[in-house]
Length: 101
Image (cartoon, rainbow, N blue to C red; front, top):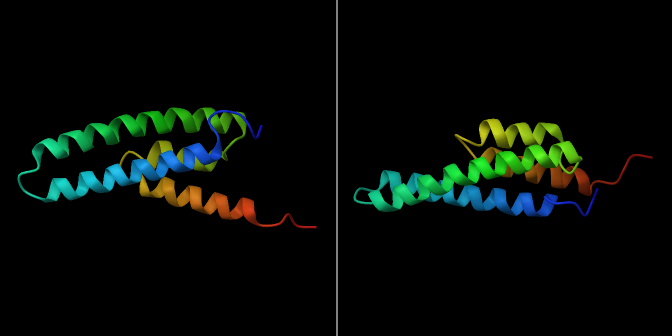
């Protein structure tokens, strides 16, 4: 189902947004005096991880993304959403390859 929600492109974009928020969280966590920014990015990361997990499970059930990618996002994404972003790059490159004859 190529036109179903959530689409591969939407999930890929949301994954990169999630990775960006997580990177900001790490930076603010290290820099002293950024408690408010750390809290905001921490909540953003938590909410995005829950949303990403739910949407990827739905997308895997609909065949939009492979099961392994949903597992990477839902399981590893809580402590390192960069893995999900890398997974989307890998899957996008796999899809761009011509099918074997």
